[in-house]
Image (cartoon, rainbow, N blue to C red; front, side, top):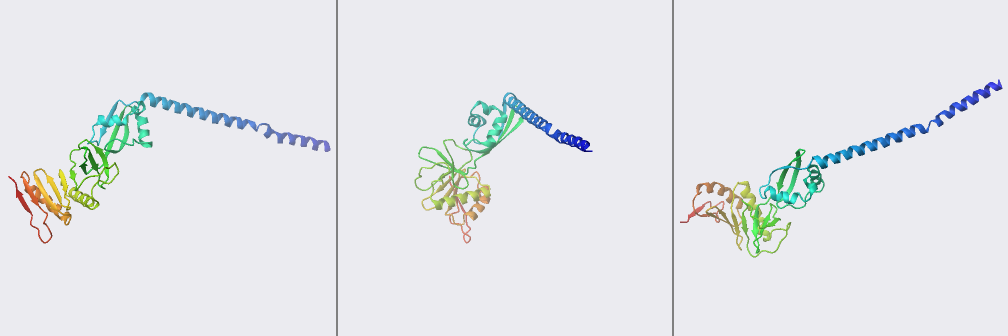
Length: 267
Protein backbone atom coordinates (compact mmCIF):
# COMPACT_ATOMS: atom_id res chain seq x y z
CA UNK A 1 0.00 0.00 0.00
CA UNK A 2 2.80 2.44 0.71
CA UNK A 3 4.31 1.86 -2.74
CA UNK A 4 1.02 2.63 -4.47
CA UNK A 5 0.59 5.87 -2.54
CA UNK A 6 4.08 6.92 -3.54
CA UNK A 7 3.32 6.32 -7.24
CA UNK A 8 0.08 8.33 -7.00
CA UNK A 9 1.96 11.21 -5.40
CA UNK A 10 4.53 11.22 -8.22
CA UNK A 11 1.72 11.30 -10.84
CA UNK A 12 0.06 14.20 -9.04
CA UNK A 13 3.33 16.12 -8.99
CA UNK A 14 3.77 15.59 -12.74
CA UNK A 15 0.19 16.69 -13.42
CA UNK A 16 0.67 19.85 -11.36
CA UNK A 17 3.78 20.81 -13.30
CA UNK A 18 2.13 20.67 -16.79
CA UNK A 19 0.51 24.15 -16.67
CA UNK A 20 3.84 25.72 -15.78
CA UNK A 21 5.59 24.07 -18.70
CA UNK A 22 3.14 25.61 -21.23
CA UNK A 23 2.74 28.98 -19.49
CA UNK A 24 5.07 30.82 -21.92
CA UNK A 25 3.22 29.68 -25.05
CA UNK A 26 0.16 32.01 -24.69
CA UNK A 27 2.46 34.97 -24.00
CA UNK A 28 4.33 34.37 -27.26
CA UNK A 29 1.06 34.13 -29.18
CA UNK A 30 -0.28 37.37 -27.72
CA UNK A 31 2.94 39.22 -28.50
CA UNK A 32 2.84 37.96 -32.08
CA UNK A 33 -0.77 39.13 -32.44
CA UNK A 34 0.02 42.59 -31.04
CA UNK A 35 2.99 43.01 -33.38
CA UNK A 36 0.91 41.86 -36.32
CA UNK A 37 -1.83 44.39 -35.50
CA UNK A 38 0.72 47.22 -35.18
CA UNK A 39 2.28 46.30 -38.52
CA UNK A 40 -1.15 46.11 -40.17
CA UNK A 41 -2.13 49.53 -38.79
CA UNK A 42 1.18 51.01 -39.96
CA UNK A 43 0.61 49.60 -43.45
CA UNK A 44 -2.93 51.02 -43.56
CA UNK A 45 -1.75 54.45 -42.38
CA UNK A 46 1.14 54.48 -44.85
CA UNK A 47 -1.22 53.45 -47.64
CA UNK A 48 -3.68 56.18 -46.63
CA UNK A 49 -0.95 58.83 -46.58
CA UNK A 50 0.31 57.67 -49.97
CA UNK A 51 -3.20 57.79 -51.40
CA UNK A 52 -3.88 61.30 -50.01
CA UNK A 53 -0.57 62.73 -51.21
CA UNK A 54 -0.78 61.36 -54.74
CA UNK A 55 -4.51 61.18 -55.52
CA UNK A 56 -6.17 64.10 -53.66
CA UNK A 57 -4.47 67.09 -55.26
CA UNK A 58 -6.84 69.97 -56.02
CA UNK A 59 -7.57 70.55 -59.67
CA UNK A 60 -10.80 72.55 -59.32
CA UNK A 61 -12.10 74.99 -56.70
CA UNK A 62 -15.77 75.93 -56.38
CA UNK A 63 -16.33 79.01 -54.22
CA UNK A 64 -19.47 80.77 -52.99
CA UNK A 65 -20.35 83.53 -50.55
CA UNK A 66 -17.56 85.92 -51.57
CA UNK A 67 -18.93 89.32 -52.57
CA UNK A 68 -15.97 91.57 -51.75
CA UNK A 69 -12.93 89.70 -53.06
CA UNK A 70 -12.88 87.64 -56.24
CA UNK A 71 -11.98 83.96 -56.03
CA UNK A 72 -8.42 84.43 -57.32
CA UNK A 73 -7.67 86.99 -54.58
CA UNK A 74 -8.86 84.63 -51.84
CA UNK A 75 -6.91 81.73 -53.32
CA UNK A 76 -3.70 83.77 -53.14
CA UNK A 77 -4.07 83.99 -49.34
CA UNK A 78 -5.43 80.45 -48.97
CA UNK A 79 -2.93 78.40 -50.96
CA UNK A 80 0.37 79.40 -49.38
CA UNK A 81 2.37 76.22 -50.05
CA UNK A 82 2.22 73.01 -52.09
CA UNK A 83 0.43 71.10 -49.31
CA UNK A 84 -2.46 73.57 -49.36
CA UNK A 85 -3.15 72.34 -52.89
CA UNK A 86 -4.17 68.98 -51.42
CA UNK A 87 -7.87 68.74 -50.62
CA UNK A 88 -7.60 66.52 -47.52
CA UNK A 89 -4.71 68.50 -46.03
CA UNK A 90 -6.50 71.80 -46.72
CA UNK A 91 -9.65 70.55 -44.96
CA UNK A 92 -7.70 69.37 -41.91
CA UNK A 93 -5.71 72.61 -41.67
CA UNK A 94 -8.92 74.65 -41.91
CA UNK A 95 -10.43 72.67 -39.02
CA UNK A 96 -7.37 72.60 -36.78
CA UNK A 97 -5.75 75.96 -37.53
CA UNK A 98 -7.78 78.18 -39.89
CA UNK A 99 -6.14 81.02 -41.76
CA UNK A 100 -5.82 83.90 -39.28
CA UNK A 101 -6.27 86.64 -41.81
CA UNK A 102 -7.85 86.81 -45.24
CA UNK A 103 -9.26 90.31 -45.95
CA UNK A 104 -13.00 90.62 -45.32
CA UNK A 105 -13.29 86.87 -44.54
CA UNK A 106 -14.54 85.77 -41.12
CA UNK A 107 -14.36 82.02 -41.71
CA UNK A 108 -14.85 79.37 -44.38
CA UNK A 109 -16.24 75.87 -44.74
CA UNK A 110 -14.18 73.52 -46.92
CA UNK A 111 -15.52 70.21 -48.21
CA UNK A 112 -14.44 67.81 -50.95
CA UNK A 113 -16.82 67.15 -53.80
CA UNK A 114 -14.53 64.47 -55.21
CA UNK A 115 -10.85 63.56 -54.99
CA UNK A 116 -9.74 66.60 -56.98
CA UNK A 117 -12.53 69.16 -56.38
CA UNK A 118 -13.09 71.26 -53.24
CA UNK A 119 -16.10 73.39 -52.34
CA UNK A 120 -15.34 76.52 -50.30
CA UNK A 121 -18.13 78.48 -48.65
CA UNK A 122 -16.99 81.94 -47.57
CA UNK A 123 -18.45 83.65 -44.49
CA UNK A 124 -17.58 87.34 -44.82
CA UNK A 125 -17.24 89.83 -42.02
CA UNK A 126 -20.36 91.92 -41.56
CA UNK A 127 -19.59 95.52 -42.40
CA UNK A 128 -22.22 98.25 -42.22
CA UNK A 129 -20.25 101.43 -42.96
CA UNK A 130 -16.87 103.06 -43.36
CA UNK A 131 -14.96 106.22 -42.52
CA UNK A 132 -12.14 107.70 -44.59
CA UNK A 133 -8.84 108.60 -42.95
CA UNK A 134 -6.27 111.20 -44.04
CA UNK A 135 -4.45 108.62 -46.21
CA UNK A 136 -7.63 107.73 -48.11
CA UNK A 137 -7.91 104.39 -46.35
CA UNK A 138 -11.42 103.14 -45.74
CA UNK A 139 -12.04 102.16 -42.12
CA UNK A 140 -14.79 99.53 -42.32
CA UNK A 141 -16.76 98.71 -39.18
CA UNK A 142 -19.35 96.18 -38.08
CA UNK A 143 -22.69 96.31 -36.20
CA UNK A 144 -20.94 96.69 -32.84
CA UNK A 145 -18.99 99.73 -34.01
CA UNK A 146 -15.61 97.99 -34.08
CA UNK A 147 -13.15 98.33 -36.94
CA UNK A 148 -13.23 95.21 -39.12
CA UNK A 149 -10.92 96.15 -41.99
CA UNK A 150 -8.71 99.04 -43.07
CA UNK A 151 -8.35 99.01 -46.84
CA UNK A 152 -8.24 101.18 -49.93
CA UNK A 153 -10.72 98.81 -51.54
CA UNK A 154 -14.20 100.26 -52.04
CA UNK A 155 -16.94 97.82 -51.09
CA UNK A 156 -20.12 98.33 -53.07
CA UNK A 157 -23.26 99.23 -51.13
CA UNK A 158 -21.53 100.25 -47.89
CA UNK A 159 -22.31 103.85 -46.83
CA UNK A 160 -19.64 106.36 -45.94
CA UNK A 161 -19.89 108.10 -42.58
CA UNK A 162 -18.60 111.63 -42.15
CA UNK A 163 -18.25 112.16 -38.39
CA UNK A 164 -17.87 115.41 -36.53
CA UNK A 165 -14.32 116.60 -35.83
CA UNK A 166 -11.01 114.94 -36.68
CA UNK A 167 -10.43 111.21 -36.54
CA UNK A 168 -7.71 109.54 -34.51
CA UNK A 169 -5.65 106.59 -35.75
CA UNK A 170 -7.21 103.16 -35.23
CA UNK A 171 -6.43 99.49 -35.78
CA UNK A 172 -8.61 96.47 -36.49
CA UNK A 173 -10.70 95.63 -33.42
CA UNK A 174 -10.75 99.23 -32.10
CA UNK A 175 -13.97 101.23 -31.74
CA UNK A 176 -14.51 103.56 -34.68
CA UNK A 177 -13.09 107.05 -34.00
CA UNK A 178 -16.41 108.78 -33.32
CA UNK A 179 -17.59 110.39 -30.09
CA UNK A 180 -19.17 107.75 -27.86
CA UNK A 181 -22.63 109.35 -27.87
CA UNK A 182 -22.59 109.83 -31.62
CA UNK A 183 -21.33 106.26 -32.11
CA UNK A 184 -24.24 104.81 -30.14
CA UNK A 185 -26.72 106.95 -32.06
CA UNK A 186 -25.12 106.09 -35.41
CA UNK A 187 -25.30 102.34 -34.77
CA UNK A 188 -28.92 102.63 -33.61
CA UNK A 189 -29.75 104.61 -36.76
CA UNK A 190 -28.16 101.99 -38.97
CA UNK A 191 -30.10 99.23 -37.21
CA UNK A 192 -33.31 101.15 -37.91
CA UNK A 193 -32.35 101.58 -41.56
CA UNK A 194 -31.64 97.86 -41.89
CA UNK A 195 -34.91 96.89 -40.17
CA UNK A 196 -36.80 99.08 -42.63
CA UNK A 197 -34.77 97.86 -45.62
CA UNK A 198 -33.49 101.33 -46.44
CA UNK A 199 -30.11 101.97 -48.04
CA UNK A 200 -28.20 105.23 -48.10
CA UNK A 201 -24.88 106.17 -49.67
CA UNK A 202 -23.69 108.59 -46.99
CA UNK A 203 -24.33 109.58 -43.38
CA UNK A 204 -23.13 112.91 -42.00
CA UNK A 205 -22.94 113.81 -38.31
CA UNK A 206 -22.63 117.49 -37.42
CA UNK A 207 -20.89 118.98 -34.40
CA UNK A 208 -24.34 119.50 -32.86
CA UNK A 209 -25.19 115.80 -33.29
CA UNK A 210 -27.56 116.21 -36.24
CA UNK A 211 -27.80 113.40 -38.79
CA UNK A 212 -28.10 113.89 -42.54
CA UNK A 213 -28.58 111.01 -44.97
CA UNK A 214 -28.05 110.82 -48.73
CA UNK A 215 -30.27 108.59 -50.84
CA UNK A 216 -29.70 108.94 -54.59
CA UNK A 217 -30.58 112.58 -55.38
CA UNK A 218 -32.38 113.19 -52.11
CA UNK A 219 -30.87 114.76 -49.00
CA UNK A 220 -32.62 113.64 -45.81
CA UNK A 221 -32.40 115.89 -42.78
CA UNK A 222 -33.14 113.76 -39.71
CA UNK A 223 -31.95 116.17 -37.03
CA UNK A 224 -30.98 114.78 -33.64
CA UNK A 225 -31.40 111.19 -32.49
CA UNK A 226 -34.69 111.96 -30.70
CA UNK A 227 -37.62 110.05 -32.27
CA UNK A 228 -35.11 108.53 -34.71
CA UNK A 229 -36.85 105.14 -34.99
CA UNK A 230 -40.20 106.80 -35.81
CA UNK A 231 -38.56 109.12 -38.35
CA UNK A 232 -36.96 106.19 -40.16
CA UNK A 233 -40.24 104.26 -40.19
CA UNK A 234 -41.94 107.20 -41.92
CA UNK A 235 -39.01 107.61 -44.26
CA UNK A 236 -39.68 104.12 -45.58
CA UNK A 237 -43.11 105.22 -46.87
CA UNK A 238 -42.08 108.67 -48.07
CA UNK A 239 -39.07 107.81 -50.25
CA UNK A 240 -41.08 105.85 -52.88
CA UNK A 241 -43.28 108.94 -53.35
CA UNK A 242 -40.35 111.22 -54.16
CA UNK A 243 -38.21 108.81 -56.18
CA UNK A 244 -36.62 110.23 -59.35
CA UNK A 245 -36.89 113.70 -57.81
CA UNK A 246 -34.14 115.98 -56.55
CA UNK A 247 -34.56 117.76 -53.26
CA UNK A 248 -34.30 117.91 -49.50
CA UNK A 249 -36.55 115.92 -47.21
CA UNK A 250 -37.02 117.62 -43.85
CA UNK A 251 -37.73 115.37 -40.86
CA UNK A 252 -35.59 117.24 -38.33
CA UNK A 253 -38.63 118.87 -36.67
CA UNK A 254 -40.78 115.74 -36.65
CA UNK A 255 -42.31 114.80 -33.29
CA UNK A 256 -45.39 112.94 -32.17
CA UNK A 257 -47.05 116.34 -31.82
CA UNK A 258 -45.72 117.74 -35.10
CA UNK A 259 -45.98 115.16 -37.88
CA UNK A 260 -45.47 117.54 -40.81
CA UNK A 261 -42.81 116.39 -43.26
CA UNK A 262 -41.63 118.83 -45.92
CA UNK A 263 -40.00 117.96 -49.23
CA UNK A 264 -38.07 120.88 -50.70
CA UNK A 265 -37.66 120.55 -54.46
CA UNK A 266 -34.32 121.53 -55.96
CA UNK A 267 -34.17 122.59 -59.60
